[in-house]
Length: 470
Image (tube, rainbow, N blue to C red; front, side):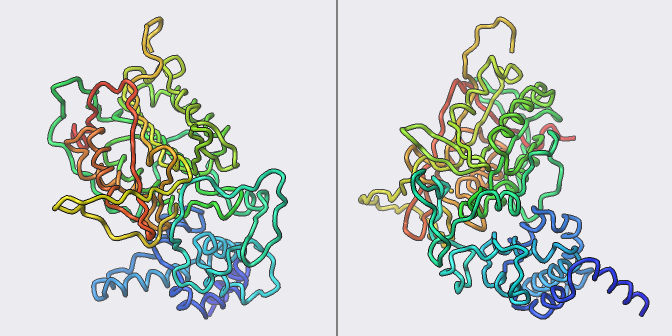
């Protein structure tokens, strides 16, 4: 009894009793309305629970051996909501924000029933209400990483209605956006869960008959700089599913032996500050290879590619590429640099062309039901050299992103890296990525074509994962 009284006293200092009871009473419905893997991943990303807490709530202490896979997932799902009840006075509002960001509107509405006049987090209901009766409301038919929802400067913002919702930028920045802007420039070492790709290991250092970039170091094999812009001032522009892209890339490149620097939701000034600091660092000076992945919304204006940052500021892609000019980036002269920009380069869907097929048909994967359419001093060296620039689409066209799995391009790339990086050069991996990408279709039968540009990338690059072995 004494323990129960102490526990109750601790609860009262945390989440309100009516909120705890409401979660407990409606736990089975909350489970019905949500997907555990998606929900727990976002909850960990936002810091409402830690990776260690996730491991604890998923540990069934041997009982799983007498349970089916569905029963195990159900029990872990229950443990999740039980844990949320103990996560402090703001946990209820944070849970609603997480559910809302993932599109679980039925779950949000259920939680709001206990506080019909509660305005503690008014934005959680600001979604397109016509989706509220859809059990799969976290999935959209065709959403792209393209030009996002802006209004002309001379057009007045419409009032909130059932058909169109406008979120004020300041409130979103304060209430929703998670940003790594203040995180120091240190390697990302946190655990990554839920990733399935296992990189095959090399049995030797691979070289080609032509020149090959050196990729033999045990501790300085490569540096991955990954920036994932997920949130924007307008909630409707959130890149749902993008978190899984970041996790997949980190998971793959860690297995290859890269040092990872990962950041979420940087504005333009923060992005360039961290990029310039990193490429001037000892980590990059000593590395054999550098990979940049910038995931965000993109657009093409007057035949020029642009990217958008979390503060809605926009810059030309060329401005980013120019940071790798020899005079600005002496630490990477003569070293392979792979720059990946997996965002839209226009707003046109690629509908393909109707052609007569050869007798051997092309293998097409089932249409996706849930896509979002997302130096040496005084040396005479080239201004830009040893650079591969990778795009997820051709100029003028959209890219596609599954709201749960992540973007088509990144997921295909990670699959091909896991399967082929042990004995295949990067350019061949990019060709294999395009082959996988060509099999994918949206529900409207739209497709996507990846391309890459070679700027003096004159040698073969083999990643040689697992070699030399420790």
